[in-house]
Amino acid sequence: MSHQQTDKPDARRLPNLMDLPLEEMEAFIFSSGKEKYRARQIMKWLYQSGVTSFETMTTLGRDFREKLPSMARIYRPTIARIQKSRDGTQKALLELEDGLYIESVLIPGKNHWTLCVSTQAGCAMDCAFCLTAKGGFKRNLTPAEIVGQFVTLRHETKEGAAVGNIVMMGMGEPLANYENTIKAIKILTSDYAVGMSNRRITLSTCGLVPQIGRLGTENSINLAVSLNAHDDETRNRLMPVNKKYPLAELMEACKKYPMPGRRMLTYEYILIDGVNSSRADAQKLARLLAGQRCKINLITFNEYPGSPFKSPSPETVSAFQQVLLDRHYTAMLRKSKGADILAACGQLSGAYTKA
Image (cartoon, rainbow, N blue to C red):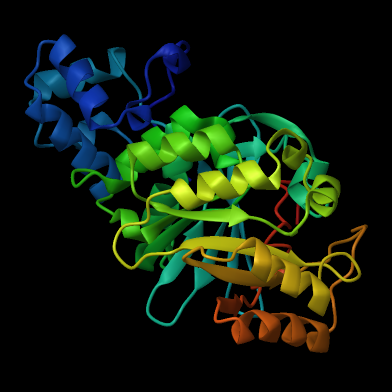
């Protein structure tokens, strides 16, 4: 656990420098009477070196280093526990400074790891198949708490140092925490901070139509849409957000979302036995997505204790996929990882129980 610069009685009232994208950091440093380029130096220390105290920032003058703790603080989430799955997946339980817990997942790949980060503590979207929803919504995460999941795991775990992709698919709906999520993306893609290409970041949404439109004008990260049904009646039942933004509106927003170069928008489709997984369902899904340049990630429902649904049989899943392949869609069966430690899609809860 890192010693973070928050130990003074009123320290939490001070601005957390890890909440600030570069332009805001520059404005803050300039307002303190220092040169703007000092902001770039501080960001390199925070994100590339992973320091959590001002005194270690040796490229700053001693006077400035001694002054900074009275002006600002450094805070990021701390690791409470890491669970390891049989398949190599690791689930990190992270503690926030108000005592809440969130979860991040390190997913192994051939050449690098992918980190799945949370954007909210809990979730208000109430999707019927998702364990996170069962715990209700607690609060939005700050930019520091979103980016901090990556920074903490990068500097405190061997696997975190090998992360090559970030997916915003953990706890919460990223677009319901729009401003903080955008700030986090700016920090992640800044050359002076994490320096990750926007091609390496994917945001997953349940379908908040106005925010999808806004996101498309502000940056060019990858977008994944949790679809899970081809008709409003089924989607209303699975995902209450559909009552506000029905499929016709969602499809229109997705068609307009800019995906540069050869990149394609991703639709995520959780296959649930007896609900949305028949060959007829696949045929209707193909019709719904006709004419769109997209790929479809098929995910078999991940059961959890008390879950209301069941996973379909491998034969059902294969038949569903084949219908889409026959219609020339890129349809991949995404192998869920970490199910044995409740780290798979839709299984995160942020629940802390002493081992």
